Image (cartoon, helix red, strand yellow):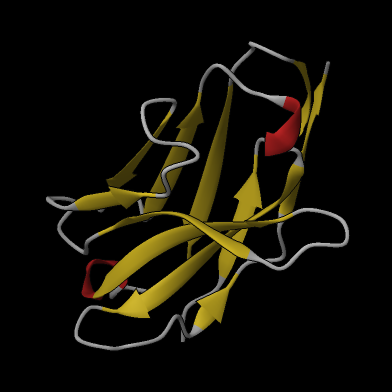
Length: 119
């Protein structure tokens, strides 16, 4: 069982930056690939980025590539999402999620943190 708690959301002006954090419980954090997803009002949840269990591999949605950076610290059971050059269209609730490293689905989700980018 993994419990995930996101933090760091807030209100920022367009062009600004925010760093989201996701704290994970459990002693097997490094068994999980971690992902960030987001859901804007009236829209489907969408993939933002993922980082492998070791941190060696990352992938990004085209919409955030070059602006967002995902990282993790397996010694602290933490995942981070550094978001730069934020745009109003980045406004959404951001969720972190955990996928077993040899699995095919994200099994654990946090409660989400709101990010609002004003124009």
